Length: 137
Image 1 (cartoon, rainbow, N blue to C red):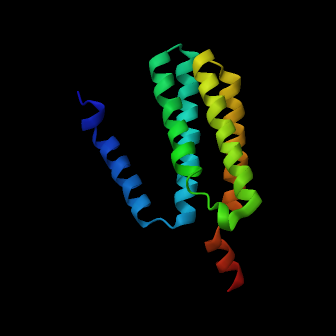
Image 2 (cartoon, rainbow, N blue to C red):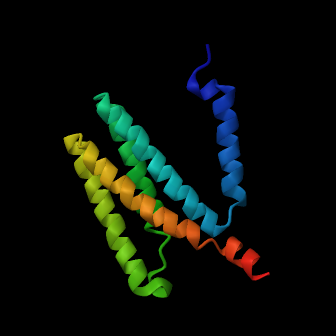
C-alpha cells in the first residue's frame, strides 16, 4: 500500500538517524560512517548473491562514497601523522577493492573490505573519549 518513501517506519527511522547525526559528537559521527559503510556492503552482498547488479552497484557506490568522502576526508594528516597517512592509504585500498568487487561480482572481496572496516571500527569504538572521561571521574 505504501511505497518506501511514504512508509511511516522508514520516515521515523530516517528522522531518528538525522537527529542522531545533528546531536552527535565528532567521534560518534565517525562511528556512524563506519556503520553506514558496513551496512551498505552487507546489502550489496545480498544483491550480489541474487545477481541484482544494479542494486549491488548502488550499495557499493554508497560504501565507496562513505569511505572516500566521509572517513578519508575526516583524517587530519597534520595532527595524525603516520597513522593518518596509513589510514588514508588503507581507505584508498578499500575503495579500489570495492570497485573490483563491483566489476567482478566478487563477494569474497566485499567480505575482505567489510572485515577491514570492522577492525578499524572496533578500534575507534574503544577510544571513545566519552567513556574515557567517565572512567577518569
